[in-house]
Image 1 (cartoon, one colour):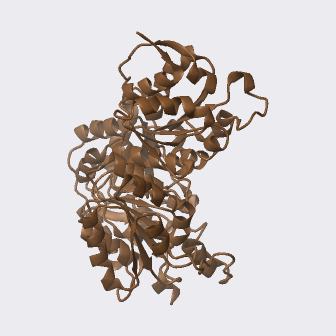
Image 2: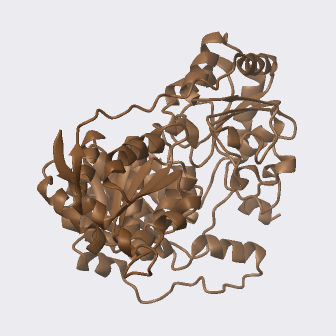
Image 3: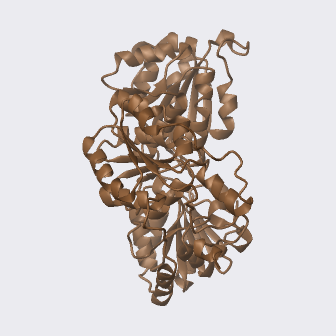
Length: 559
């Protein structure tokens, strides 16, 4: 047992949990912790981001890429509130993260003191749990509990706010081995399994919808075996990318507003929809009254709150997906649905994704990245048209290979997340694909990449507009382009070079592949500005409030 300051206890607890990298920005209230980190810099790497929001996104990206808990730090007041968007992003996508903030001393709380904010009150709706520590005797136990909460069950972000006097006071510290997060199996009921098995065995046209929960549960192998056993087509949500191999013959593509027609029609025609770790987001279901209207719905999920929340189900099994699927797989005999699978295969042939291959477009950018990486990179995105193209045209073969803000839709997420992903997976090439509007929100993190020589490749799909909003304005708002045109004087190449990165401008399709290959070989931070047309659109598309079976594309608009 040792007598340590609160700040030293924080660092020792991080070491207990196996934390090797943290992302943050110092300030007055958190200075004691930064002083303790200075003494342990050979054990914990600290990445100083350009903005606290970047730190939160970096911790999120680190967690998504590694499966471990991401950690970010910020001081009181504006430092803490700058984390809020990143915390909310992690919350909406169930990402395990611990955000540590420091507040003014206990005697100054509630007095509108300098840089004081009730950050636990602010973040209560967007955290899985949060704490304020005003007593050093509780500090270590709170930090340990925060990590267990963040990674257990349905994961999520936890905030720990510590008053400055606690970080300066001293108390006993004794090492404790980290508590493992047990997989949740006690909620898996035998009668639920029996009903699920009966529904599967009686189905003639099953379809599997894979969501982000399958990635979080590391259940990719179990999903693959399940699909093979019941011989069913497989579609995925944006968050489910990589949980089922995008090159597998049973794969039909993404489902929903910008999903493939094959997936959307397959769900509409199936007689059993097995939903594996998805929450029936409105972007997936479209009009819920018409979603999977011919099917019985079987939902497998860890969170009972998701059952019957957005779509009524006919049966469900609650628990850890990896365990549920193992139990089902062990009791399923191989099935054969050749006629149904062949029908869906014909849908894939009838309605392929397509785009103009004569010029530089968003899909061409994504397909070229796939070609030069062999599908073996970590792809991070911002939010908008480029995000959908990245989901449609890159074939994700493995879990944790697409990192994107699916629930909150956070513009400015990607670059910070890419830095976190690269710090966690130094063995992987990491690309952040951004629109020009998104890139401008947090492009200051290029300076972070160059400060530490974190070799991320930033690809800007630059159409000089807010592309997805413009697409809606074109289709639904009579081409009234209210404040979505970004045709100004910003030169991303010069900006990137000013921050120390290598930069390229690409205007022709044939220029792209050699630039990407050179960027990968350099192994330094690179920005590639790809100029595309302002009216390129993402298709297929489902109109707001329509059924997913009403998906249309540019060919339909010409009829």
